[in-house]
Image 1: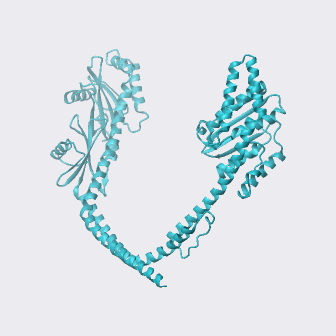
Image 2: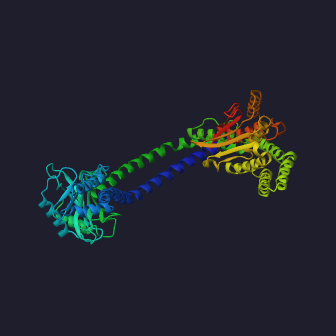
Image 3: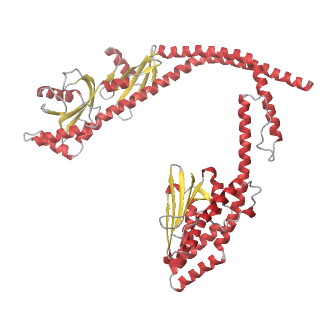
Length: 590
């Protein structure tokens, strides 16, 4: 009793020390946290602003790429150049106009976000999709404006116009953004322009960004022209010019006295996105979060002081009981119910998990004993069956006969196949192999059989490539095929054996079929009973001396597969297939 009271006092002391340490730690952490967390929140919001700018820039890139792709689709190919040059002459025909209009329609008919595509010459002649109102002189003036105000003589010349009223149809007050690209002849002289429009509400939707519930100012600046492609900031020209100058610095973020800027350059176009937010928006969010965290910390300190004693008593007692039980555990009593009372939810999980682990380990040991007994016996029988005198002498006799008849190449192939079979069967170190290895051994075996029975044996092997590297017990296919050949030769002049391995939705299905007389229901029932008996009987009672499968036949193979794959294994014995013989079908989870 005295020792017990001493232990209880130790637990109380532990709870007291724990409470004091946690209180001191939380208090110190809150002081440091309060000093630095504001800056951390500010930096996180700054990073969020940068990520937001990258997202907007990516979407703006998509808009510009869509506009650019339409111009490429229209102007690509020799047909456009030829028709356009002819359309510019006095000899233009209706067919020329129809061809150009068809290219305009085809370029944007599957792009719902494109409003209009237009072609126009320096003389003001134009072809345009949709309703169009401008006079020829207005179009001519528009072409001259682009030539005089923009550098259109570069190889990749193009201009992106920001939000403006639709030049081609201003009757409805629609605003658009546009790409204008010069059309040049073989002498690189400008002969006209192609213009692609998109409704401006697409870019407005992209640029409607918020952070911490506040709207963010967004501007898209074109570097080659120094013009703004889009801006939702209602500021004067001097402010926008200053913003443009600030964004030219080699920095992703800039902080001024009142604002924070995030700049995201495009990876594909000469432009950048500038996002502007008031500093107060970022610091206000940090201050609010700090206040909430301080309140939570104070509550945690109080709760820790009140419940530390209770938590210590609730946890330590069942845990100590569990530890004492674990110290006494061995292979004989593993998996038994753990004698721990007054379990807390935490220790309930530990105890349940330990009991479940012990049960699974015990089952695994039982299953391993069965597997080892069956596998060792099966491999031994397989080796005997494979290299038995009858098989070996007949194979060597067949090889000698081929040599006498001058079939040296066939004899050599048969020798190689026989060598591979002997090497494969005699390797006791590997009880598990891939399906690909099994297929190689099966082909070698069938090659020997084919050299022996010649035209009396036909076979077909089909394997899904996704199954090649899946693991399977060694010598699974050969005994099934051996049975099929053995019993079918008694009934048929020509034996047909088919082996198919398929994969679907994580499940593997194997089918071995022949054209023999078919398995009798009595034999099938005996195999089912044997498999059921083996799966239900205790492994310690089911010794290797009782695993008498009769060589590596059907029953032994199914037992090994059921042990290897567990509950996912299934099988079917089909006595009457389309060939009139037997089909053995089984499967498992990959």
